Length: 424
Image 1: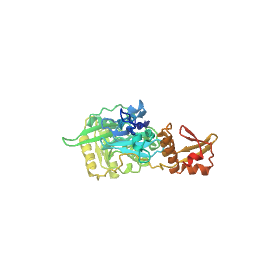
Image 2: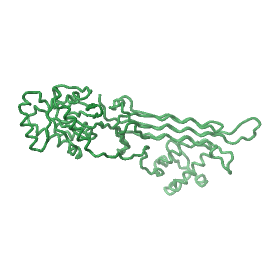
Image 3: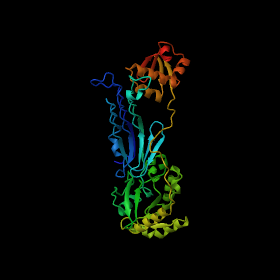
């Protein structure tokens, strides 16, 4: 089955916890701190894999989680960093944040990568908190939590040339006749229910990639028939082969209708270079009316190439004409994109909500700080209070009306507010 859209959940690894530990050896009375820091959590990295051409894999697996970093050890030993998690997708895959709709990256290059969720950093051990005022800190950090995201994956096939036309015009037959692709072929409309890719070899040095796009009908841009599900795949192509059914009742009307659907879906699609080909000239009825067909298109200034996908007549000529148009197109430099996705956000912003149970504090930075705090160590708790002060949260709570003994919630952590602690 051809799958070209999916929504998956990804989560990077949590950083390893830092350690509170003191050197203990025989004959050494007061060993100093030697707690090591934790290892970094694994990143979630999307990678374009040219061996893939569908998102079928994501029908069976929709949740991906990178490994966590390991805890720091004694004697200043740093915990082992986790391996990164690579998620392979076909070239031509667009990654979007499923919740905001923001585009992360368009993976078009071979082996192109993007870090969507960086792994959490390892927590610092108590060695890192030693200073001239505190020679024996009972203070460390837990590892930074990983990042969770829902990612919308959309595949737009990458091909040099797209083959378009009305249902049953012979698009799949053309692809099969000039490439090694084996699309489904039958004498009824909508035989092709999925886009097909094939590579045509024109000579020892020239190859082109073709995409057979399922047949379009009137209203396709709104989703009718096979609709806009497949129109998006034409956006990737640079040149179009517009195949006309030689047995069609009104060939010019079919030609105009397809072009109208392209323009209504995306104005740029209507501007793509086209080679127009009349198919099925091996059929006597079509060959008898060949002069009329050519004259009808000539009146509109359109050069019509006549072909047969059965006898292969003029198919090579058609491909060379498409290749000529392809070569005449200007090169467009790919936009440079940062390798790591960093969505714009006010990282230190916070929100204070009053409810029947107390005060709830929400915000990315303060929630992470709470998760990285060792609540069993008094010095770690005092450090967290200083973070509240430095971020302006303590002042904001006082202005909002917090009172001595009120409950304050951050994530799953609950505190009892005390002004003497606030003034530490």
